[in-house]
Length: 401
Image (cartoon, rainbow, N blue to C red; front, side, top):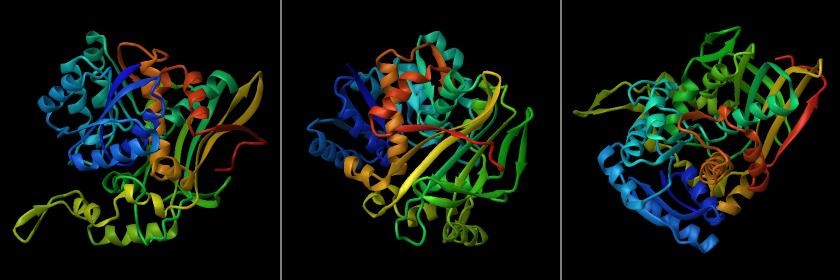
């Protein structure tokens, strides 16, 4: 049993600590910290009511390395689980190094002033973590995270060689609201408005945002428009699986969402460039974030399912094979269990499982690791046990897209 410090009290943080409290054989003591302590206290109250487990709470500015280091030393965790904003990854990694504690996150670092996310900043910590004898696990959410584990599982058990890989992320949930993002609005809108990018024949192919779409019939959801996007796991998959000739990421969006996004973009509300307003500097996207519903408030409103998986083509025992590994998660069931909708659930549960892998020693090492570098089997087993069951389906032929 081990102590853990979770930083971040949004929907993902809420799911993670609820699930940790359901596994006290692994997580002996939980501290939850964020900038706003009242959010932590509300989650702690829910955890106590649902599981009977008491967790500690604290206020922390995760941009402040010294303060975070002091909190870590006070809480005495074996692992820090970073579920804060990706802008804060490096500061929290610095605090972990300063306090001699292992690290885990779900999303790679992104500068505040540039809509660009990549692993280079965190991979640069490899020597420091290795020399300190510490482990940093990057991207233990669903995508990135589970989709990378699906890929390693596919290579270990289902295909001798992977030729192409498509990641399909469908949120079929409906909130009844005209426009809302299902996770942090600022991060969500940065992703959606970024140019598309995929890996093909050893190079990156770029295109305009949301310019390439396909219709796909998702089990449990139905036919949906999905759009080619860039997503961070493409970078690590291309690095650790150079055999794969093409890697793409697709995400579904409804027409209403895209129309709202187009209008907001046209009037400058999705910009991250500072502007002056009534004598003070503001960033339009941060103002938009403040106007949109808090994603953690969407739980009781959201109906429907998510369907996220990987379709890989390749060869098994000398024969061509196409395999589809996926999870379907119900928004209402996720809310009934943890008080959060399925988008938070599908990220928070893998964060808990990744932490469990590290704390039980099933995943261990010194340095900075991506999910693709580790044994998929114990992680896949825990997905089945803790609310994210998966299936494997053989497809008759590679998909046309």
